[in-house]
Image 1 (tube, one colour):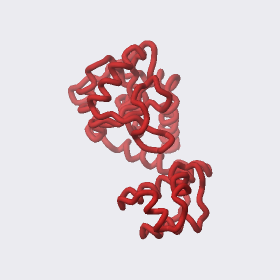
Image 2 (tube, one colour):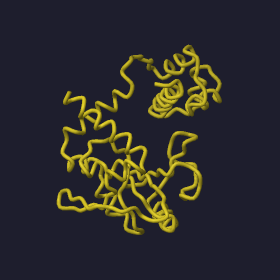
Image 3 (cartoon, helix red, strand yellow):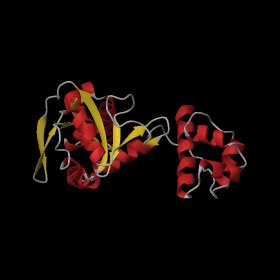
Length: 234
């Protein structure tokens, strides 16, 4: 784990605990007797606090830090193993995939990324419906997001909201909606697809071989899944 990732994780943990207690940054800072601006920078992952300051922040919320070690990305390996033991239809239902797809009718799109890999049998983690859509349909997508209470991921603050919805605006192409999260790959033309069927429903998905060439996130998860398979056979 890199120091940058550690700072991000610690900041996210403090922010989560603060939200659970309905505390503002100013209130937490007062309780812990630290500067409010320092709390904001820490929660955004911009600066690491000293151990003493971190302990004061956590103690102010009646929690403490527990430290452990594990192999790099061991949590991801465990998640892949757990997904491999579950039927695909169960995983589709758990994601609410069909419910979201049934509402994406205002513009053409195809399923790509980790979602496409899942639908082709790979037990990879999926945190959002991943679709490819054309730039020429971006305005229709924006209107759809506005209708369905969309909020765009704000990388600076580490949460949804506070930035413009439009795909043309700089930032990660990730949105939350009333029906689930959507990650978009914007392109001039939709990629070629194949049809897969599950539970009596058909899905148009980007083939695995193409995902490994064009989708770095999905390619890394597929590589990790194959490595797990090889390890289990050796």
